[in-house]
Length: 557
Image 1: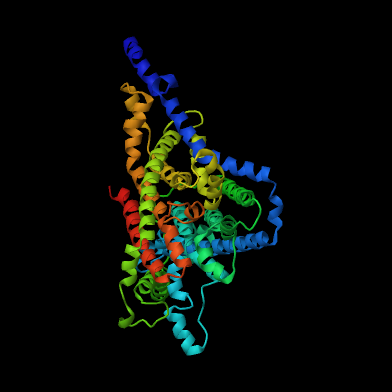
Image 2: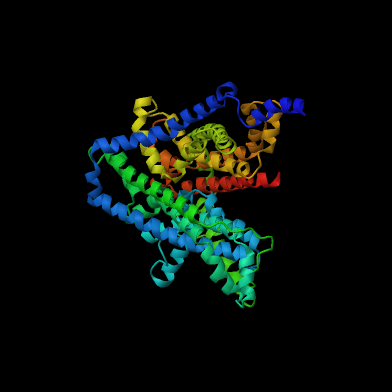
């Protein structure tokens, strides 16, 4: 017995991590990841804080243009977040807790706006409700005025809502599946109807998820650039994002970088405040015991057919109609001409695929997207494994630091890199856009890696340690390989997101660094609507297909 104890002792001590960190290299790996995180996260955010404080331009925040833009941004962000939560929660309940016909295909269709770039969605909806859309042209000929023009504040709020409700739907659906069905069954035993049990028991338990989704959506919509620039500016609806773009492009104010940094700091404070509030809401949300009983399905009864028709029509209008409108815009000879066979042509698609500006932008976008995917994939895999599978000091803080940019508006990240670019030799180079991509998108891979690792026991690593493997070897052979499919899926999502990205690219644009998103935006601003629609259609279809494949693949394996 004594011999067994003496033999097992060293192995057990290695399994518990008693080997000195310097001997197995884990501290070196952690230090390298911290340096990368400091460069891509702390350096740009620190630069924007220093310039804002040192520039003394906070007085400009009271300027009339800034106040108007801030008001417009706040109104559009809050209104769209409220509507998005209302629609997303309604869809989540209908698809998960009712006998609505066709729930599975409806759920997939309802998520597609999340996969389409917002500025592409804006161009698509111009074909549905723009001044020269077939609907408005027919309505004008019949009644003397257009049915509804999407330009202006109402159009901005509508499109922000359309592209945000899938996020609320995902968050609420996940929370809905965690609600124990025993509570609803108890209410049913007490005499409550299925609808009464749902609204009196389940909905109050969803309050933290509803608040969390509202905060995340409001922060994201607060600094969106694509939708306000395409839909808002023609009606002089200026937001903070479009105002920052104007300041940087026109130089209408003294020391524009300092002014923009001050605006960025305000957005940064709002984003961090929302993130902290979201964390507080998550901690206060009580843990509920899991239930093995299946959830009670709310039978719609006589309203099932009518509800199904209404929901199917609404989802098809939101998802399929814009794609059809893009197709029509790309095929018509000119905007506003009647939709007849004589006016259809492939010239715009051919021009889109042969225009050198767009081809250069596509080439740059693919190059930057692939590099961003590789860098984000490696960093995200390392940070995710270190923060979830080790008890090394500071590992959880590293994971939190990597996730911080997810709550920061893209416009703040772009301005931050603009500030430090001349000092590190990245100014007027495509690598500046790449650095901003890494800052913004590494969190996507970390989040993808964290999910499978956090729910997997560490017994495999412990067995490897008992067999004599060091900590780095055990993490590499077990944890990294286990998380590799998730990291690859996250990297694919990074690549597709970077290819069609606009907010960062349009602010960091320099000679020779044209991207596809900026090229499409430039076509739209220059009046080449059909060419912009043709490229938008290509980007939308390819993006939906690739992201759908990447997110479905782990479930299939």
